[in-house]
Length: 444
Image (cartoon, rainbow, N blue to C red; front, side, top):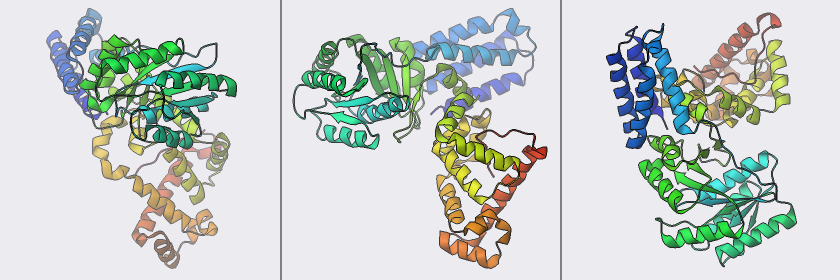
């Protein structure tokens, strides 16, 4: 989402760095560029004004102007202020001692509440919880059926009474959870096309009926400044505990993520970063600030690798790498593990420095269909050919090309990429002393 903002900020800091020692007017000029970049990213004007004021106050100190590398110090100040703007520390659901914890998801129609309910259930289940989904949107046609489909996809039970009062359904769901060992109830509430008194009264009644629930507002980040306005209005009418921003992987300018916390005073707890049901991340202000500044996000990358890659498989692959026995079956399994981590463009942006290279790489080099093609080629080989590519003569390559629906040239390109990766692996593991982690990404 932050591609344009990241590019603008990177360009500004690169220009400042080229000047060497900075003068006060250089910093003021650079911060004007930062201000324009934030405004163009649809960040709230008041938020931008306060942000730049804070950065300028620190950046114009003698320690910065007289420092050995003032531009790096300025980048650090901007980074630290971004972290503060986004919430300083990450915040998650606060689970009650008296089970079950009730999570009330609210928001306007179209914000992604129902899908987010499923994503949250999947994430909490992965953390060892036993969530129950509760359908209380009795107004929107097929809303209950949609939640049932989502629940089935994430293997979570869905509680519904069909028609009825949302308050009564919520109370019944909590009772059912207590009787059946569910420690979390995720309530998918009814939305409206706009904020009105009736909706707010119903949400307040649902919250009151279950004591002290975790009230999370789901907002569509693609709506930009409007998402912030919606969040502010909800916060004024209903006591929120936090926000979930959906569609943060979209093409919008990202202002909602930078403004929502400052405008509402409520932390962003989760962000939706894709359509798949596992594409819900805990929001870490420091990591997001690093992504915005093009510094990557190694911690999230490592977490994704740990979740996607079976540790025993990783250990066996590492052993094969250290003994130079990396073959096409390993190559195929390696690609599958990388793809489990998410879309390749998102993965690459988590590598420090890659955000600046993305425009040069281009969308064509990140076409996921290329990975499908590579896997199809390898699958069209015999076990002997996968273990020893050296046996592949022209006749065998023609057979493999026909079997995978590609040209012989594509088979040769894939084999060349494999040889280059194998060569790189041997260099990295020369002498058997180097340690290879769970992740190694190669690009041609």
